[in-house]
Amino acid sequence: MNRQVLIASGLALMVLIGAPVIAHHASAPFYDPEDRVEISGTITRFVFRNPHAFLFLDVPDEGGNAVEWQVELGAPVSLRRVGWTPETLAVGMNVNVAGNRSRAEGTNGLCCVRMTREDGRPVLEGGRVREDDSN
Image 1 (cartoon, rainbow, N blue to C red):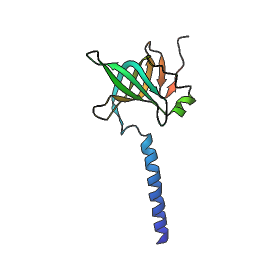
Image 2: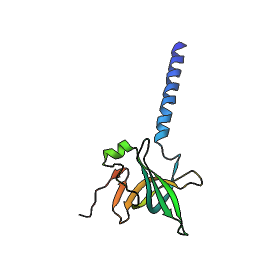
Image 3: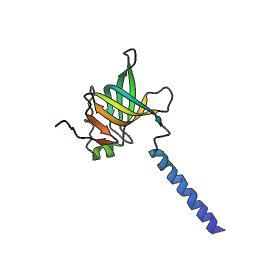
Image 4: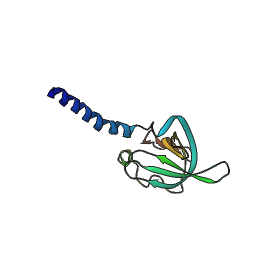
């Protein structure tokens, strides 16, 4: 009987410890993979801190008014490994971003899948910095 209790307790502990780790890395609960959006805007802030970096853009709506969008990026440690720094994206820079829209109703957010500079050169794709191909 004690052996069964020990095994059951061990399994319960693994589930309790493992579930939050798996849940943290899943984006589907927060971003809808079926609702892909593309936006173009001007960077107002680039927050390069744990657990995830965030980019804030002013994106013009149909009436020309600026609407703030929040773009979730990867962890700064991962971004640094591929060459990113807090200075990679400057305030005032115009970018085009495509990704999965936030599920939170009434918000303007997305999880970035692809980002390009205003002239179309890639900045970020799948979490990686791409080199300038124009040379």
